[in-house]
Amino acid sequence: MTLKQKTINGIFWSAIDSFSVQGITFITGIVLARLLTPKEFGLIGMITIFIALSQSFIDSGFSSALIRKKDTTEADYSTVFYFNLIIGLFFFGILIISAPAISNFFNEPQLKNLVQVLGVVLIINSLTIIQRTTLTKRIDFKLQTKISFISSVFSGIVGITMAYNGFGVWSLAFKTISQQGMNSLLLWFWNRWRPTLIFSIQSFKELFSFGSKLLISGLIDTAYRNIYYLIIGKYFSAQELGFYTRAQMFNDLPSKNLNSIMSRVTYPVLAQLQDEPVKLKAGYKRMIKSVMFISMILMAGLAAIAEPLVIKLIGENWRPSIIYLQLLTFVGMMYPLHALNLNMLQVQGRSDLFLKLEIIKKILAVPTIIIGIIWGIKILILGMWVNNIISYYLNSYWSGRFIHYSIREQVSDIVPGFILAISVGLLVYMLGWLMPAGNLVKLIIQILSGGLLTISISEFFKFEAYMEIKNIVLDKLKELRNARK
Image 1 (tube, rainbow, N blue to C red):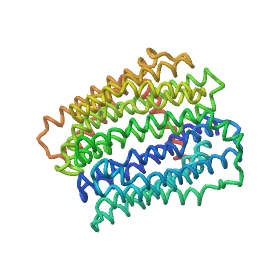
Image 2 (image 1 turned 180 degrees about the vertical axis):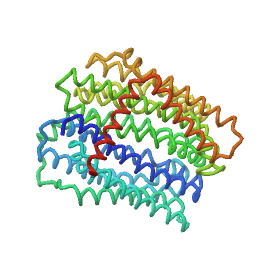
Image 3 (image 1 turned 30 degrees about the vertical axis):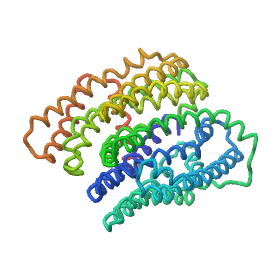
């Protein structure tokens, strides 16, 4: 199989993985939102940052280092496995000890037991990272898709059953634990890799020299992305945080899925082209055009249909989530572009520059966060817009320098998709605003009209990104049909 075929196959299975898993998670979230209250979602949101930061320490940037390294050995994998396990146990202990302080900080007594129980996820994940890394390095997402799908269905059943039987916030906690636990169990069962009794200091030093910068970068970025949960929970209320987390749930379905798909697949693919600059730029350019075309269309469309979507799926009680969702879509629109630019820095081995950029971007974000605390959640999200623009400039400037792909050239590649997305999004929004129909009918008509407009305009103007995506889809469908014969 050629690298192009591996890439398309990887994207295909990664897309099925992400959208099937997130689709199940999304449906589960809708059911849970009807069974639970905004405050119960807010309680889980309050401790997200602590779990996420601990998880960043467990990975330590070693996964990226292993994927980038062309001649990985058994000693490399086993060394990282044992290190991850030790760190997982360490941070589990830290969470157990710090749980009372976290509970007191938010003035929510329930958080103590929640933190201590959810902390077990860190140990589970530390056992799983290398299993997933070996599959990603081989650009094998088919098995990961199968495992993720089963785990999501299983955890969804656990969460909904517990919520229906009155377990409240604990249904959300055990949904997370059961998903990660089943995922780890199946990875160990179906993936053939097993650790050996090797811990190589030389391997550790070599991988950590690259991964340590990514660790610090990851910690900074994780803290930034989750600081909003902490701020809203501390300075506003658990209920407001609940509204924000539901808006984030809707926003994440397209944005983080697309981000996850492209990050997982493009990094190992680009890493294989790191010594071929002409092919690297050509492949990178195609990725940015295609990915951003999809991202901008999906996110602008989501902003347009936000009101009937939220009201119909989770109810009138969640109406305050609508404006948060509409604002967040313009933040989520840029996620895949940031991921691709940062992947290029990793491919070039510049984890040091990766770290410097993260520090600069997060320092520049501090004033907007402070303003948001003073003026409210909407202003906090608008501050994210400003940070997004600054981050894009810094990321694209430096990543582009390595392959002679300037910001001007990159912007010119994505502008057609942006103009199309905003135009169609506005038309779809106006259609919903003018339509007297109920939310379900309005939602269906908006989605169908948006899709039809996008395809018609793209076919008429023959947008390069659209044609690239169309050809890939048609080729894949043809391949699947031939496989059945």
